[in-house]
Amino acid sequence: MSLGGFRNLLTSITINYIKEILFHLLWVLLALVLGFSHMFLILGPKKETANGIMHFFDIIHDLALIHNGLIIGSIIAVIFTLINLIFLKQLQYYAFFIRLGMLIAIAAIVGVIHYSLEKIVDII
Image (cartoon, rainbow, N blue to C red; front, side):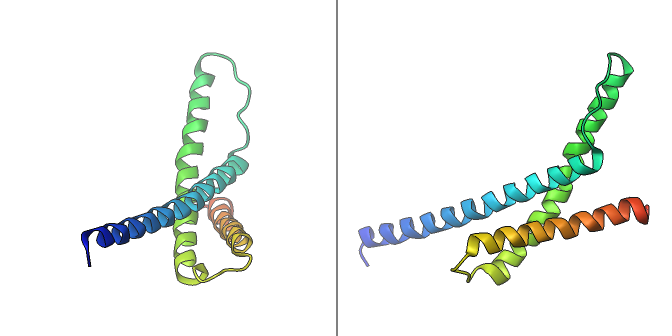
């Protein structure tokens, strides 16, 4: 194999890996958005506050939203990525809609588990 043929092969392999990484990165970002939206539903919107000590509670609300939203979103992303790599990689027809439905289903299951552990069982 000549050096030019090797470069073309290496370039095509590299481009395929970059496409694969960007593909999964977009789904991970969508999972993080679903995690943030779950925590926003749990915490509710920020209350209008005055100055002083109430500003401190606004900061705590924002930190709880970011911290817990990232954790819930990361759990959703890991579960979805594993299912996507194991089961959904071979899909060709309606692949986007099946992946989106699977991501929403995983987010709903994780949300129900989180809510039940937090409110019903009082573990979290």
